[in-house]
Image 1 (cartoon, rainbow, N blue to C red):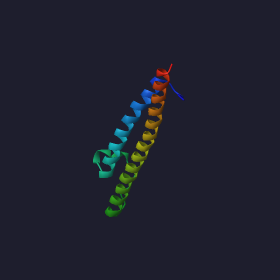
Image 2: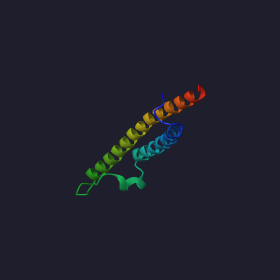
Image 3: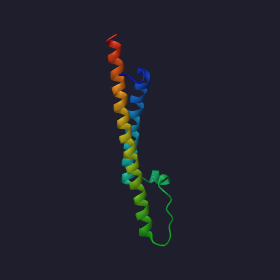
Image 4: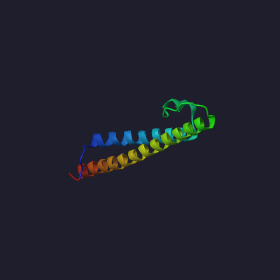
Length: 96
């Protein structure tokens, strides 16, 4: 049973695929600690202990990587729903 039209389901498919690719790659880059993404980690202040500072920065990178991968999984769900709607729309147009 189609809930949305064929154009909206196709748009959902395209956006979902792009979101999975982009957030998956960003998660990998956060995981390896890419310096270009250092501005996007949570605020970390340097006090006196350099090891503590590095540990907090690494934790921020790891947390952002996990957040990106969770968002990519949500896009997988959106992709599945959009694909089902696209299939339902194409099926209903063929049977008419």
